[in-house]
Length: 87
Image 1: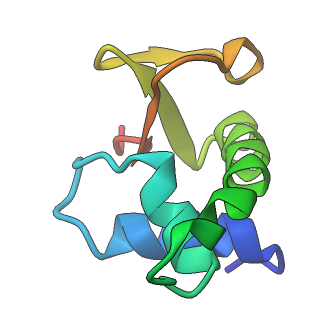
Image 2: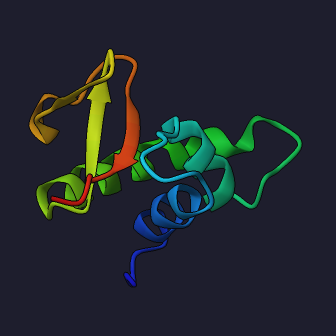
Image 3: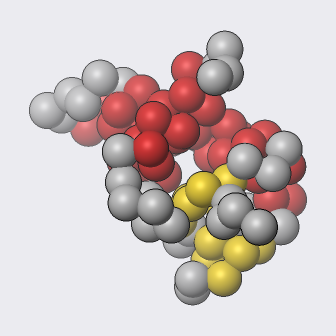
């Protein structure tokens, strides 16, 4: 459980998926914004991406580009998020 609403939106969205399935950051941004019918969720995308970097640094999630994990500091382009596979 986290106190950051963007981090929580990512974790909740991932928890609603099958294990090891990834999400697009826009799904968490829409959840964070309350699933608006318009495009107002877009302002939540930057906080979600920053939260994803924090969660990845903490080892909670992986940031993927083209299906492969990337370093949180190299975040750019089209990405997906998934829970870190259990070792």
